[in-house]
Length: 434
Image (tube, rainbow, N blue to C red; front, side, top):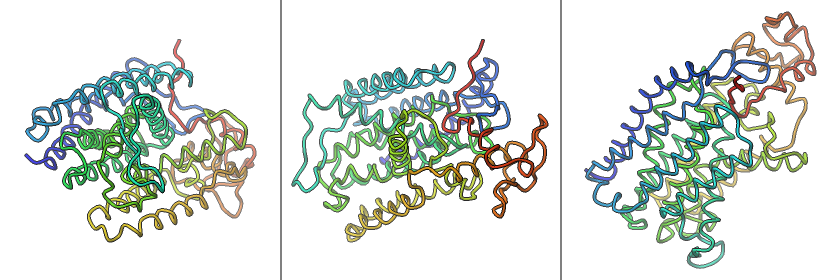
């Protein structure tokens, strides 16, 4: 069996195991009270189980173990300790996320757990060994003294980037499914061209990651029947970090020349993950401007800005999937047709300018008020409740809420903003029990 066929088999196994196991996780989560209750701080309107990421972690482990029995992987991929290291790191990250889903963990403790998972990867040899320095010929080989720090920063950064975009049903799973699928194709292309060692586990990790996202999406697309929680978001972030380090940080030469911002091939995974990385960068800039904590939630993430522009829940998710797909295709195409190398940086720059122009990190109170009104209305009347653009203080279908308070046309932007601003959009945390 070829590597390509082996990766397809891994995707299928990961998807099937995750899909089937999620039914059981949903049932257990409801029975144990690991659920997210609807309240004034949340966007969903019904009690929803969380910690669905447990099924994703188990699905990944099952896919990797099955891959060990496939001829394409058995000969080379499992002659190293890397697969065991990734499985151990996934276990650490999944346990951390599960604890946070049951009883929220403080940000410093969460980062400490992410660093621990990164160190597990490092000690098992899953890290990047070289990077391309801008305007410098050749590669900078990373020494043993700097590798732990680089690995930790990369894992923490990617894990939190995925965590931040897990704000709408199906968003994180869909974006990571597209990104990991593209990364798998890129890794296989590098192996085919001799730029990557044949026993590199990057394509296998990317294929399994894509599979668990595909298997989880039927349960998670709007309206979600289960949330992945921090368990799933951080496991996906860890896997994407490991796959990008294995593929982008270990290629032996610049496949596409020095045109990908002088950073190829590491820039290819970065561009593929541009949506969550840009969202994270915008969030950091916003909070620095406000002089607030980096961990403070707000309503200014890319997906909320799309909703503010008038897109519904599903459409906002689909648009960000489309952005990820376009960026992935853009950087993959020249690896098959190198004559387009020189065009890629300019097109990516144009897309980046467009994103900054539409979703700049500054804060608009009026825009936040409109989003708050839309969310309050959706909670009462469903996704089709719209803001009347001619009078932002009124909504179509306005009326009275279940508790007798006015909604939409009977209230003002500021009233709705104050009511709905408390909603914690960015993450789905279960309530404290007991």
